[in-house]
Length: 613
View 1 (cartoon, rainbow, N blue to C red):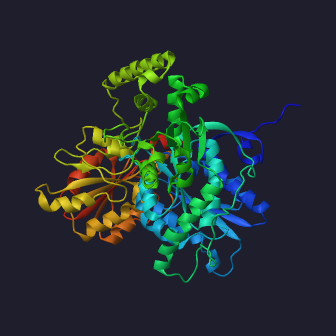
View 2 (tube, rainbow, N blue to C red):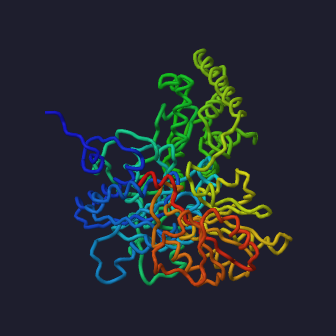
View 3 (tube, rainbow, N blue to C red):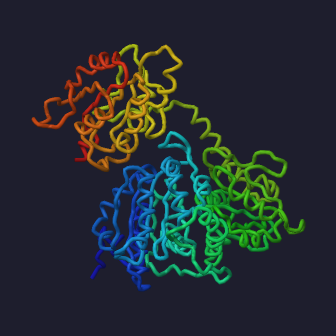
């Protein structure tokens, strides 16, 4: 009989191979951790919390879809109101043995958020990491980085933020490594007592692969060259703050390095150990290096003829230098290929600084030995740019005629791409039927400011919408600027998801400073920008009216495509007036004359979400 295959196999099967996306692999990962713990005689639970955002915009939806599977694995999924509160809840899961009545031996946790969420959570990351994880718990923080600012207002590289918090950073290169290194991340978090960051890019999380799923295929090796102190490395109470810092710097981080070294997770991927030319790379850049070599026609035999070897790093920080130094031995030159800042390059140079001159290779990366730029530090690296750097370091005459021909073809293709980029750009616009088509319009003579959300697209339209701010500070720039300009008033667009995430505090700030501003709270009944997820709490137009009224907002107006849809007895704040969207211009003209803070709640369901429903 033919083998029965279902879509649930990706979560149900316990061994073999299944076809997974990166997002689905991250959903499966905590279930695999629970399986490993049960086999080890541990009764553990799991907790997942965070806040959505590309490239992890669909992670919460995938978790909801897999709810029956994660529940069966004793895993709680509870999205946070925002990223730092979610991280604080995860901090609490490591404290269960400090309270009476713990029902589990430990709780392993996963935090998720995109780059801006990493930034805003720096305080709790540092506090929770210094406090430590529990012996049978552990926390892995999934950081969705957007190197090209494709869906963000700033290009992100989260490693420096995690470094500031003292958290090791793992950068997987594919779906299989999401599972394998994810299990190592939990094990390392438990062994070292540290929270562990796990870097996620759209190039890997949105990809798919057939992967091995046996939770026991990963062998965990406990370091034999490192001795933990008698009192351990885990969370405790009471605990002194300087003692926490001392443990992180002098014990926990060396313990993480010992774990990584014991499990040999940085590896030689191509060539011979005694090759004269080495490339050290990481994550997505490793895939780009392999593509660059493929484009050049450099296969294993040609790499050996050239004397080329590749060493793949998995933990960006702190760099496991014993393996890196061993790889560097006998090399004349090492080229470090990594996107954005030169984190690995700096750590390698520091590790090699005191090595004997005859054992210290030339190390280049972002710049060459003369300080000239070799690989850029902004944007992302393309396979062509990497191929060009490799050719430049070897010299074109070192390559075969076939490689020379392929490189010339690469240059021609890259030149055509640059010329095409100078063409017409497609300006983003609202979806058909989007409420922001109406809600973001302002009267003649008025100006609006944007924030985070779909409505930000109004900046590129003829709607006199200028500037934006990070999530949760909408209107705060005007609090400062209003003192130094003759313009008396602005409108501030604020999405309902952002309002509930953190924007409410910005309204309180504007009220406290008696700033003349009208907040247009755009209630579209879903977190539309990331896929139509529901709000993470009780958010309705009438509850918004009550909240802002309680903060001191005196004038509140509601505009809707259906102003009569609200049932009698709906608990609106005192004085709210109701208007059809056809009256939007008239209402805004009135509100811009109000001194202090006024609020316009624009209620119309997202058209894309209506179609989904």
